[in-house]
Length: 184
Image (cartoon, rainbow, N blue to C red; front, side, top):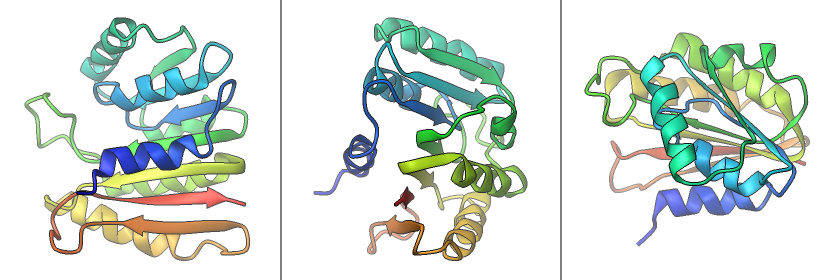
C-alpha cells in the first residue's frame, strides 16, 4: 500500500542533501522540521514558521529529543512572511496544511488568504534543482478550498522551468494529498 509520508520523503531526498538550505513553512509539532534538519546536517540550515507559540515549544522539544544538529531557526510568524527571514535560494520547502495535530484546536487552520501568497513566495525562493512539497487536507471546508486554489495556481507555472505533479488516492477523495513543484 502507498504510504504518502514515505513518498513525500522520497521526493524531498531526491533534491535535498548535506549542506543545503530548507524551509518548513508550517512547523506544527516539528516532524518535518526534524526530517529536514537531519537531512541537511550540521552544515545546512532549516528555517521553520508557525504562528502558534505551542508549535515553537513542541518543535524545539522534538528537535532536541531527536538529536538534530543546531542548524535550525524557529520563527513565530505566518508562512507568507518567509522572504523577510530567508534571503537565499532554498533547495527544499515543505507545507503541511491544516491544523496542528494534538493541539486540540481544529478551528485554527491554515487559511487560503495566507497559504496562496506563501506558496507563491516559496516557488519564487526555489533554487536550481529544488523541490517544494505541499500537503493538503481536503477533509475540512477550508482545506478543500485551499487545495482547489493551489491546484489552479500551480497549474499556471511554466512547464519549461518547473515540473508540477499531484499525488492522491483516487478512491478516497477526502484523504490528504500532496503536490510537488520541482525546478529544472
